[in-house]
Length: 280
Image 1: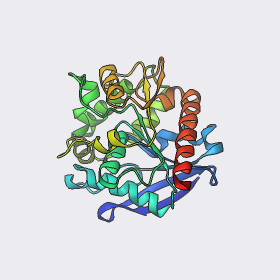
Image 2: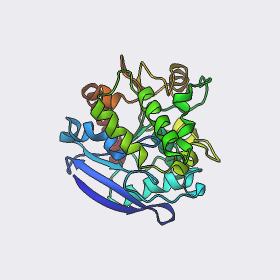
Image 3: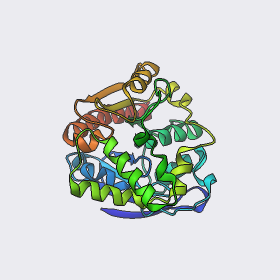
Image 4: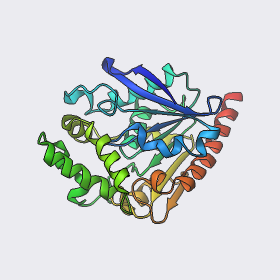
């Protein structure tokens, strides 16, 4: 594993981890709300790493990246989109595949809406929706508004409840402890601003793109619900869909071997199409 420091939007320093095959096509793994680059640890330690160059930043406000507290660093598309562009440029990623989990899917759309799709091979959304259609009223555990609290006891209780909702089966004590710690690295001001944005994700560029799009979804989802997933499939009829029985919001963690095999197959298609386009 290699560590990088990349300067993103507004001078925010981003901690970025790199692993896998340094000669392989690049996959940029973008984690979710209140998470960490270690969310992708099973991908860095699995078969995917044998074939692809894997890049995983800690988002601004998360992990070992800078954590400014003012809302304007998080509550609109530009900071997130420009951070992704900065990682692509600084690490010289040649037409990477963007993979966004949950909030990371919003960030993929932020990037495309501001910078277009010319510089990428394709996009994969994991437990993410391009529309709020079918969202309905979600549970208090999913909303996790207690995580916005400056009272650490309140925030900790909310974070644990949210994590338990993200997985179909109970996490081991060790995994729950680790993930709780990773979540608690994020200041409550960041959690709130990253969710309560002045603008919603703009899927227009993604919907119009002719680049490959993949949808990865656990059939026991409680965060990106089945109606949200079906609405996304309807909005993206050309997208390749991969579903995981018995998995929840994080199929890459709950079904890593199946997820990695599907992502590798999707990546092969995306990179092959990108190579043909570059040669034309």
